[in-house]
Image (cartoon, rainbow, N blue to C red; front, side, top):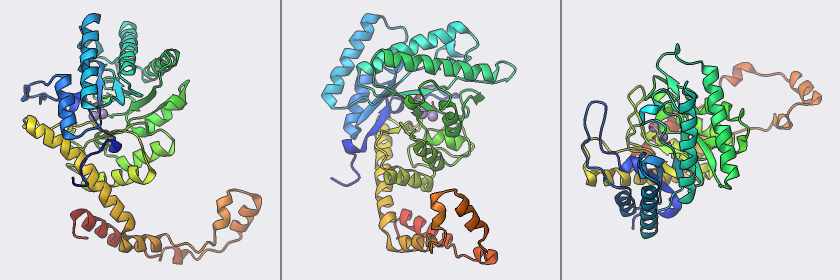
Length: 388
Ligand code: GCO
Ligand code: MN
Ligand code: MN
């Protein structure tokens, strides 16, 4: 067994909708036959995944009767037992049905908003029944094409009311959920509210149960906004809000690509993995991606294996980075400190302010400090390319 084989402790998960993607796009019909949820579980077990996540309607069709629902859940639970796959996360589809054409929680129509709440209550029940502990909210249609259509303050208040209501519902039912909000700047709407990790963090502070609510950042979503994903998850982590993560890849400035993790921006992927491993993130590593439309089912397995393998290779690279004598000695020089300003670590005091005010700085010398970042980056690149 190579050290790049996935193990349960790596917490690699996939959505039913990811490996189950049938290769439809806005210009073309499906290229792959649909797999049933049970078939997907067996595929995931075959490639070595730990967990599966789903939208309510990935598992139970939107028009299923209660009896059909129960039969489907029973079969799925049996397949979970047979394969050893677990369900760490669940979510609601609030975007496919035409009812949600103008959003769900932020729709201008109070009937749609109420239906979205009811649908999410049922979906919370379904997720809890199958063991999910993280519940993701991706507001894919919570936005506009024209700002003539919707008041952003009303939309924000509606979204807040919905999350507050559902927090109370979860508590009232005795569920163990943590809610993870997933920002995305656009697609399928022209503009989606709360577009970035930073905006979601600001929003969470306005909720009734901010402790219960965190983030599900996605690589592609921050990249669509031209942002640095590692910086985004660092901010979420710093706030104690990195509840879940969607790993994939994406060129800047393109359509929503959902590529295999590490397929495009390998250096960025490396720093994401390094960050997660360095801080000791223990949540799911969820791959919210899908295979190229050209892939057949064997290639879909290659896609899934590739996501996990690339993560583990980058994890090994991160370990080497942290132990590499040349890299570490450069970092030690870069961060060398004579301790002259240690007194500032106690923060503000009148005495500290007076002492600082009385200090004379050699400003030209400050600008002369050596910063061999070219050497450091080249070593990083060579390490990633396998020649260092
Ligand atoms: C997207 C989103 C979704 C969500 C999913 C889970 O761009 O379509 O990333 O895949 O992650 O709905 O909530
Ligand atoms: Mn996405
Ligand atoms: Mn996602």
